[in-house]
Length: 407
Image (cartoon, rainbow, N blue to C red; front, top):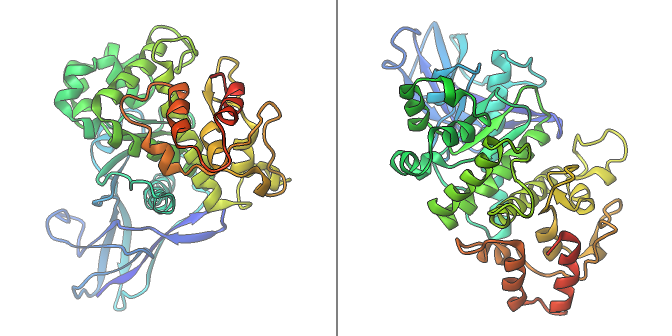
């Protein structure tokens, strides 16, 4: 009876961790293995056992599919199979008579564009969903939606999108978004919509994911997870505000690019920018905070002064997102400033010199409670939160904190 563990290497923490809740499939032969096989699911430590006796040799697959998430991986820009179905990776043949303690390990660093990379990034992305769920539990936030469809593509470098098209559904998508919006949302590029056939565009829509991670190189574990945590923070926001709010923002971002604007978030004066600022501020600060809680000083942001470059320290120093964009207006850490107590900051973590932060004591659950479908700007959110001031915090403190952020 085969048994073992599936593990993936986290290079920031320097060790292997179990790959949670993925399918392990065994079959005597590869031919017809889709039909004649046995299957089980890994536990919290990545361990598994098949309750069926084998002898001689067996073939083993790992399938990244569960009630929590499906992980799809495109091995190339035209990989329709990878786009359409959860990754099912062949781990090879294993020989008996003893099939116990079979070690399946996704090591780091994998060569980009090769099978070890696709398996490693799928396993790391899978675990991100579970780890962000633990973060949400600690913050009294809702858990990420079950059955999330995540897609890893090689279309862009180090970007992500939470389009939630699988949860929005095929009919609302085709009624409310045009082909260019769908193609841009999925791939972060709009030109394919001009050249691919209508039938293929329909297939892209039918199989559209909820979350997209675009990578053209191997990222360190903490960098990849920060992107994934950011997108997962979006996903719980979507569950609160619903289809209309989310589709409006998809159109806002896509139109900024389709109309020739190099800044996908537009500027502070672009109609719809306030809603986008609320959405992105929430995801950016929770993505960074979740990463900080997981990695602390064990990050790969810098090989030298670790204290100065923790995810928390970086968040405190920056005013706007995207970083280094002269037109950026999204308040990078304003929501985090509502929560933190600067007197308790660890060494190396200092507030941006433009910010006067006398606010502390809000919870992320309180911030999230204001983020309804009628919340259309950070200024509006500040007004809403000012009605539930923590002890010792005044409306004047709230205004002073928000001023450098532009509202």
